[in-house]
Amino acid sequence: MLKITYRFFIASFVFVMLTTSGSAATKLQFTLDWKFEGPAAPYFLAIDKGFFKSEGLEVEITPGKGSLAAIPKVATGAFPFGFADINSLIKFLDQNPGAPVIAIMMVYDKPPFAIVGRKSRGVEKPKDLEGAVLGAPPPDGAWAQFPSFAKANNLDVQKVKVEPVGFPTREPMLAEGKVDAVTGYSFSSYLNLARLGVPENDISTILMADYGLKLYGNAIIVNTDYAAKNRSVVKSFLKAVGEGWKAAIASPAEAIKSLKKRNPAASAELEEKRLKLAIEANVLTDYVKKNGMGMIDTARFAASINQLSETYKYKNKPQAKMYFTNSYLPASGFPLK
Image (cartoon, rainbow, N blue to C red; front, side, top):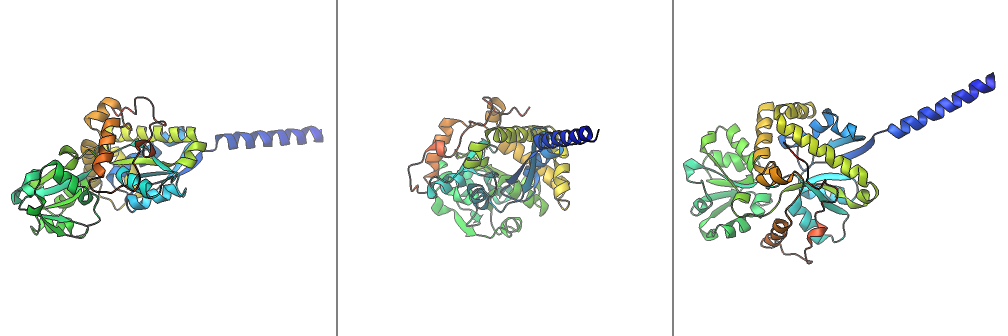
């Protein structure tokens, strides 16, 4: 009797261990490029609604300090997944050939690079910058693209007075009338100005992507060594991300509730506006509505790589296949409606 009981106990223990280990979630780390603000909400919503869990994943999201910090984290393998500007990724791979990192899902079909001005100061369209004072932080991503933007719109840059400004003083200087426009991210600069008391009907947003800039924006990136060994995990991760964005588009307010759990100090009203602006201008574009989220147009991507050469001198011959792959995406992308 004792032997039977002992054997039963051992068999039960082994069964429980096998069942537990078989159902254990795969733990993943995902680094953002910036703080926990509105556009990050869809990823937290994907956690709270169980999209990652249903794919057998347990995801930890960490804030970032820009794409230039996020990309090396993924390339070194410290994080398997990240979120970063694809133009910064292209430059990184040009400077570090063979680094194990690639973009696998486009999120910002249109980059948020913009000129944000005030109508009362005469800035509503690109040509209005001639004769105006443009505030630009030297490290700013939008400022880096200004030469291409200027070329596409035949601007006489000699007539644009550029005033170097710091990130903390950028919008305050525009609000105080010390500059006529600034370079920045469309949704952030717009909301910062509104928060400073500038009437929203006085704010003009000139999205560079609507005026000749062919570049793409931020994408999900992956460590290629990790992806080669965990193909199904990568596909599952992207599926959950797509579901998170779809749910956030359907209910931005619900997405912001998920954000607030991780950033209690955030203003729900402000961050919901920020998320909505990103969705309308950068994520849910005509191309994405037709082709699904995550995909890229190969001709446009080739043109964007070429256009990047106007502001960056390649060390090596650029190759699109080094920077982006759709091999982890469904054939029609992820539908968002």
